[in-house]
Image (tube, rainbow, N blue to C red; front, top):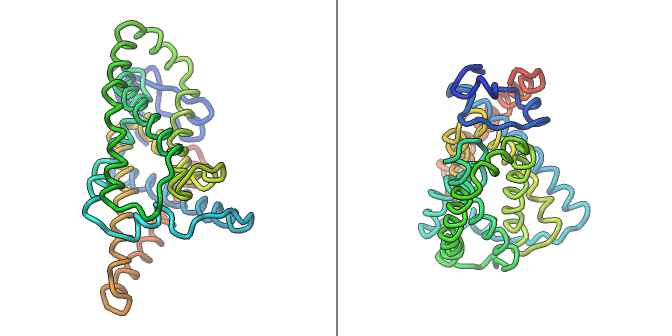
Length: 289
């Protein structure tokens, strides 16, 4: 990985394992990514999330957790609808602004990101307190998601007041307590996805959301080390193929050549991800990444 870039003089680019032991933020990303390096990170995240997801679902089966057969997540992935396309198109960018934009010491990113963070914090509380039935119509699901966006207005006002009156104190906190900020961001990101598997708040929903927590760690590292644009691009690269691939699978006749070709393509893609993911995992273990 590149070792130069703006901000690298004060906070140099560090390998993943070293960074996670002691997170630190800079005013700008210290590293630069090539497309092939980014694909390596994506393969690693896909591989790690898949393995952890398999483990959590085996655990749920072994412990007989009452996971609903048709959760909101399952219905979303198996019932294509134009009504929810706006969520697919804007959610990754909004979530990166809400959970990772403030992982910085630049005032604009910190206080702009805090406005989105407070908004998503409210959304997490709202979805935890309000059950989401799996039979919710797509348009209602869309409305449910965007309903909480009104809170960005007061959240922005709070962030503006903090910038005006407590700017230096908050920036100093982000410099001294970067670890607390980093891990809180990852934890809330994981918690925000817990009800996708259960339709309502239960403690073991957090266990099923561990893959999202893991993805949040990877995305946060990419954001801090290489810039917000890379975490946004990575979030889109994770969400859109999963959603569109699932919709294509459910709407394609199983006996047709299109279905066979699609399965062959996904199998080849999966093998490539596993192979490159293992290479990336080796580089991380050797502290090269």
